[in-house]
Image (tube, rainbow, N blue to C red):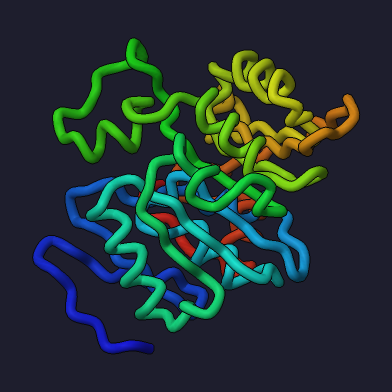
Length: 253
């Protein structure tokens, strides 16, 4: 691996798959949702993948570790996060397959060109302006609330960036599911697979994983629920399988 000098306030975290990631001690750190999305996304041999809002680059690194895709690009608007992501790519010697670009999701088509990718993935901000209190830290507010980009704007960029029959993979919150499905279908991103994620078997779902197909026909498969914990602190076999597949361990369970 490339020698690394961390900046003040940064940590180097082991992903348990042969790779590591640089994160800020007090900035937004990747969580279980990113790990689950990396396990849900299907990337085929030779495909080009784009992560919209990559943060510190967790999804491109996880997907590059365990899928046969040709290239993985992460787009991130925040300079500090994009810098950490780029240095993580360099540290892990992934520069031949992974690229980090600093830029705005709303300008992604002008950056990359229309119909440039086979797969787009995203773990977007879950909250709109009136959902909960915004963090006073601007970087954390941008990561958690739709401050700089709405879901519609993200989905519109994804639709333009995908080749015909390309696939979009999302993780989001179930309370916005009706809106999400409406927006996707309006943009000709047909929802094809959906899986609800429950923290415990007797609780309400708190995450939803979605696959949408550009210009696909109307038919969606609702997959069996994914339960995270069997009991407090003990993952179910399904979660252990995702971790055991070498896709990294979460720092925010």
